[in-house]
Length: 496
Ligand code: CS2
Image (cartoon, rainbow, N blue to C red; front, side, top):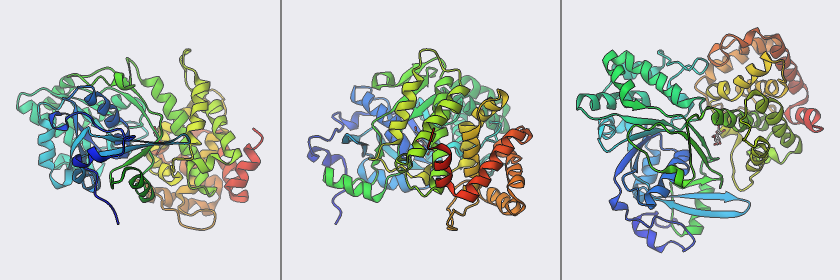
């Protein structure tokens, strides 16, 4: 039978090796509202903030909000907002209880309450982890998608928005009306120039609401860019059971993470910020290059390994990396295609970064499912692969691994694996992508590849012009069809 849930009272009785809040939580006031309080936020920004609150910065407490389901609220609120960050590596397990989150609201249950919270004067930062698709943008252009159902809904229902953009613009309108200052909107999603992208879609959304409001928002908000990094797989029941044995109580909101964490932030805050640098974050004037390196090397390899690894029959990234040909392929991809597409600063030790990524992917203590990373490919591929690909095509550079990756993605979104089993493809464009497969696959791989490269929401309108790209994708599709993914990877990459 399960034991009592983690809560304020139980903090006292936790085992001595568990790190826990040693400050008085009742003295902490809300300075940050975080939209999209999933596992990543809890193991990253909230964990950095915990360090600063513990150091005495008590006016930077966090209230989280979920814009979709009540799941996280139901996990956290009965635990007084407390949860464990469980660091897992081959070196062992370390548990820290984080107390930075005081409450969680659920947008759809009470939109007015969330708008009022965002309009509260003490709130100086509104941070976001809403995933790529939460920006309601067109991934190929970075502009607001005015046809997005949430955009249409929110413009018609400003009192009860669904999207983060609707909430932020609605709250800023209240602040303007009430003569209150604006806030910093801090995006922590894996998008290139994420602050600029956010600023752009916010401005385009606000403009549709009211031109004067859009002008006020431009003056009374900042949207710094950030590069966020920590591998945080979805928590499983087995993880919770294991933790329960360690800490002696039940934590429904626990998150599993690797020991590594990195946060590079553009120092452009409107009304102050926690001293996250003292907790290990780096503040810089320009985040762009760090973000490109991370997106193209880490996330680019992750997605490549996720589609191909899934189709090769591997459940987790660590399993994929245990296959020598895949392991070599990952490093080869980083070196030959991803790194050469970036102007890496002279003082950045890229070889060490690549080696560290390989080690992080090999972490067997984390069970990061290939299926999880494979989610939302249509929203991820442009920034993870296509910038690299465009660079290489323009410079007659290597495209072997990225065309391999694209061929695997095409096979993955067909929604049937090599054994004929269904794949549960989770992607906002899953139906369109499957329809392309169903319609064109019977006409052969040439037609199929051409139809994919002409799918403009992902590929824009330039990549369909590239004959070398199309040929490379076709030859990989042929090879994968005839040999199967695992054998094809072994025959192609084992001797790298
Ligand atoms: C992963 C990322 O799920 C995914 O798409 O590539 O969540 C990755 O683990 C993080 O960006 C690491 O910082």
